[in-house]
Amino acid sequence: MILLTAGETYERMFGIDWQLIADSTLTIIAVFALFAIMSYFLFNPARKMLNDRKEKIRGELEDAKTNMDEARKLREEYEGKLKAVDKEAEGILSEARSKGLANQTQIIADAKEEAARILDRARVEAQLEKQKISDDVKKEIISVASVMAAKVVAVSIDTAAQDQLLDDTLKEMGENTWLS
Image 1 (cartoon, rainbow, N blue to C red):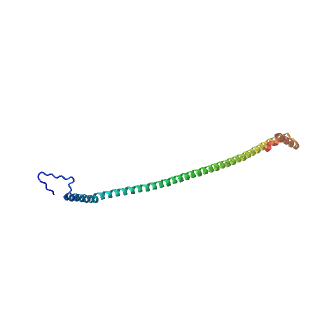
Image 2: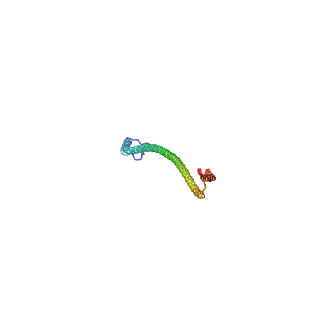
Image 3: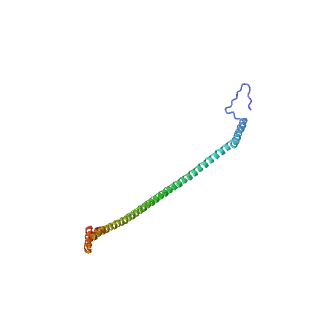
């Protein structure tokens, strides 16, 4: 301490004395202590919280990336399965078409065979009907010939004349009548 007398003014420009140095040192120590305490109680938890949050975000980003990769793989797998299903469906449809065409050709062939059998049966029936008509005509001719023979006998023509008459009648009717 500097004592001043009554009219003397003593001004220090920097006023450094031991008291100031001690106060400054204590203030600096208090600030560092306060900084250390705040660092321990405030900054470290804040840093820890920020690091934890950073790790959490990093983990979520990695999870999101793995989920995206898995989703991409699943999408590709499902697209592959869809393509396989489309190919299988196309195969089934083409197989069904070929079976349908085979059935169609088989049905047409069966129908043609049935038509041929029906035509053959109709020809046979027509032939039989023709034969029956021919037989009926022959019976009619025979009955006409019998009637003629009865008339001839009634007129008393001899046998040679009867044979000649029968031959003439048959010639008139023609041999085609007997064969058709």
